[in-house]
Length: 240
Image 1 (cartoon, rainbow, N blue to C red):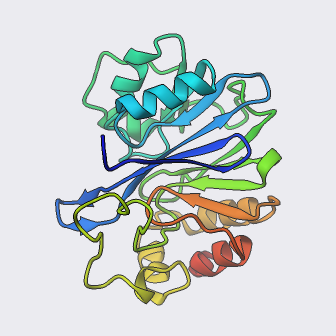
Image 2: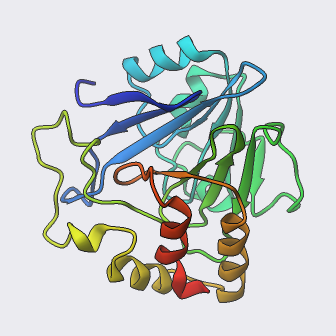
């Protein structure tokens, strides 16, 4: 897949970035993220196709032990990842399992159905916070060793310059630019509109804010390498 950009963002954290247009014309970009765990295994958010380039890099990093569906709508590629790595644990929010078109998949963990204190085996390296009050049922992850937050739709950082750097299209949409940035008013308004449980949103936004992260890797848009915690709080201030 010639338009994919694969890079090591920080030690043991790799991103797989490529173009993606919502509804075919809203250019938001897509990104999978892989973490090499202290055990030697690989934990991967499967949000983009398992291209030959992606698979080659994952196989180079180590055995894939966890395949993660990060929210309800990032479910399209879970089946192809699981077929490629049949022994890996497949874990996703309940809403993703329900929306997934491949009904043959068996999930080893389900946020929203499992008890809230369920441990899946990667917690020594990565913490998870399930946003039950958000419309897309996102799960936000924190890789402590690299002080990295990994998330999908709660914070975007558009336009996706990296995601479109190898594409023919420029990856822009008329409303993007300053309004696509996490600190813009548009994101705050959109985030507020997607809240289904204000109390749960406030709780979970604050839980994540207590983690010691210095960067945010979003699924849509460029990686945030500076002022990450301030940006997290600013983008989600409507819930606080």
